[in-house]
Length: 203
Ligand SMILES: NC(=O)c1ccc[n+]([C@@H]2O[C@H](COP(=O)([O-])OP(=O)(O)OC[C@H]3O[C@@H](n4cnc5c(N)ncnc54)[C@H](OP(=O)(O)O)[C@@H]3O)[C@@H](O)[C@H]2O)c1
Image (cartoon, rainbow, N blue to C red; front, side, top):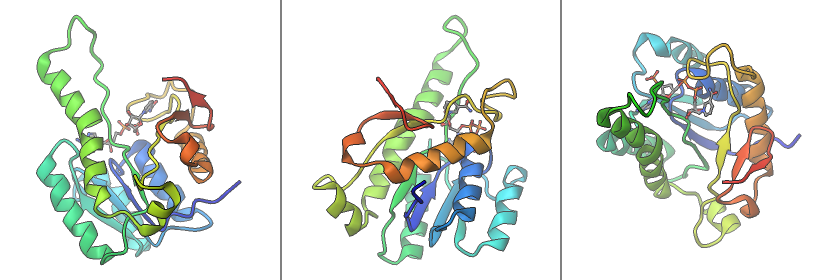
């Protein structure tokens, strides 16, 4: 299995669920990134205890406060990351943060629709925009003028707070799959939706 070679990685929603497991497996992989920027809404809060424990043992893990639904928080986080990287650039942005409202068409209200859209659609786009400024030359050379390889990955139905314990996959299996898909991606996958096993899902 090919190993992921990203040396600077930023993840959103990394305090629990799939995000936290991504951090753990990136740190424990054969080629741990030089920097992992693990962002979450409340790095000081109780839900980030495991992340803080990891950071205390891994100097390459930096916790950054970031709410993807808040554009000024994205700008603040980008400044912190840029300062730390000192011009080195980001290799990989993992837009993991997301919400899933357990509501039906009959019960959903406009506030819930807007909250979901801001978190799941606008947030990742604003993150991509902020990351554009931090692209590495290496990526630009590999992926041409646009400079970015952008894919959507489906983690499967995963046992997390969102997926519930009824789900098919453990978080360990899903994240192992996702991290084995990343190194084999090339420009032919750009714009695709792939699952955790690397199979293309038609849009
Ligand atoms: N689990 C599944 O079966 C499944 C299936 C398909 C897709 N996914 C996708 O996989 C991703 C991770 O899901 P998961 O199962 O790990 O969910 P989860 O256990 O509910 O965790 C969601 C994460 O997103 C964070 N988050 C939510 N809103 C945020 C915001 N505005 N800014 C920053 N962080 C925010 C949460 O932070 P807080 O602790 O601050 O709330 C938490 O860290 C999501 O994008 C989800 O849509 C999951």
